[in-house]
Amino acid sequence: MADPQDITNWLRLDELTVTSGQPSEAQLLRVAALGVGYVVNLGLHTHKLALADEAGTVAALGMCYIHIPVSFEAPQEEDFNRFLAVLKVVEGVPLYVHCIMNARVSAFFYRYRREVLGWDYQTAFADMAKIWRPGGAWAAFIGDHAGIDRPHQYAGEDYLLPSL
Image (cartoon, rainbow, N blue to C red; front, side):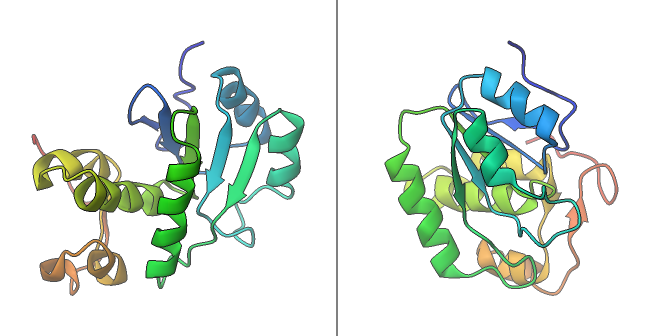
């Protein structure tokens, strides 16, 4: 089955890992058809776009659900550490990670690639840049000290995708 490109900010990172913004219940069915074993949600259940019972929907589709609620205003190191622990547990299993817009997720994977996998800046930054360039607390979270005083920039709105 082909990747469901109609999910907000859908992005395949590799053969086992896909990411996006908030899916609908119908879109989760298509995610399950990809053979995904785990769904990790970094968004808040209280967000207006969140599903009423995402955990139940995911379980009914035969996937495991993990929720790591990350405040968009104040991402924490403990959130990232929980994310890293989950990645170790699910290693080798098809994984779908989402939040509301794929901003949190792309920043987490940027840090994972830089700090754990040792990727160079350009390569690690490329997928995040397809979604956004963090400012403020998120720039601090990813170690971009020069970006702390700038606002977030979103692909297609504030800038064109760089040719990395």
